[in-house]
Image (cartoon, rainbow, N blue to C red; front, side, top):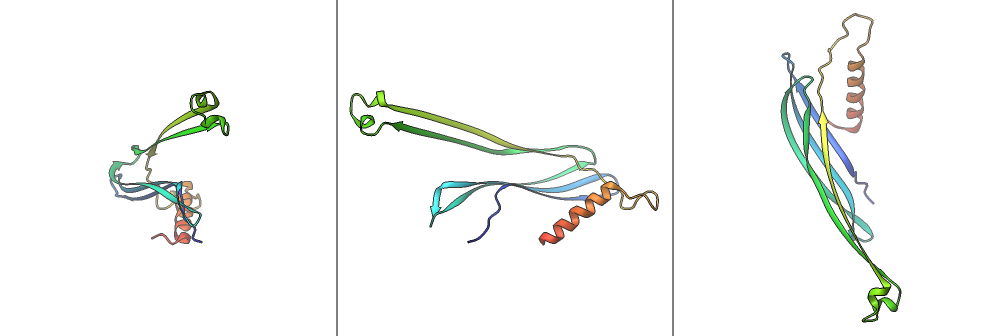
Length: 143
């Protein structure tokens, strides 16, 4: 059996210049289990994917939207036998319909942190967070 990630996966690859401009490649994936498709009892996975490239200044907010999911479901329930008798079956059945719309909206505000602390002994919290994120990415095998 093979493990597959699913849910919301966001991959941001920013590059900043000295003028405060930030170029970013943003890859977004939304996936969910599809129980209507199964192979040997293993459900399929529905995926929606988006790639975006943006140029912004530090502190400006990027808004990415459009990963929409619309689904509907119709259920019919009835009493055994009585729900199948012509003429009276409507008295012993119920129908339900469910409609679901969802959209993923991603908001990103890039901020440039200093490469080195302003004073020799005071650590920069933004730099520490960036180093932790870099360590996690390297442990996962990302470039």
